[in-house]
Length: 103
Image (cartoon, rainbow, N blue to C red; front, side):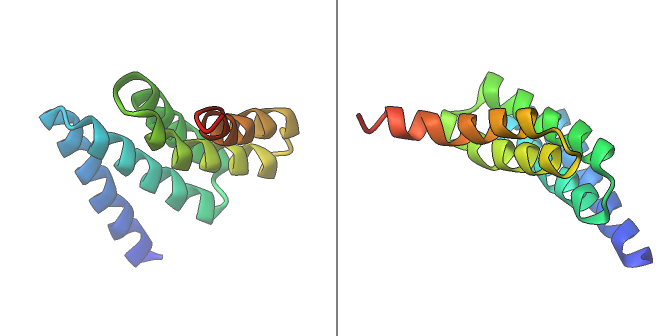
């Protein structure tokens, strides 16, 4: 458990550094990693908080392909919380743009 806490501290430090540097891609990636740690622990509300940061940064500043991990993680956490309609929204968001670009 102590190793997990140290890992989480390091990840949050990486996130803060990315924010300070204005590195949006790293900011989104670190937020996703932190959200994933909370998801693995079963801390779904905290996971959603970090995954939403990832999603917002990705939508606002990054190319569309960066949304894939964000939407997948958000969909999974919503599903675990029993929010099937929210989960479906993020899963469709994950899949739909990639199919539309191929048409």
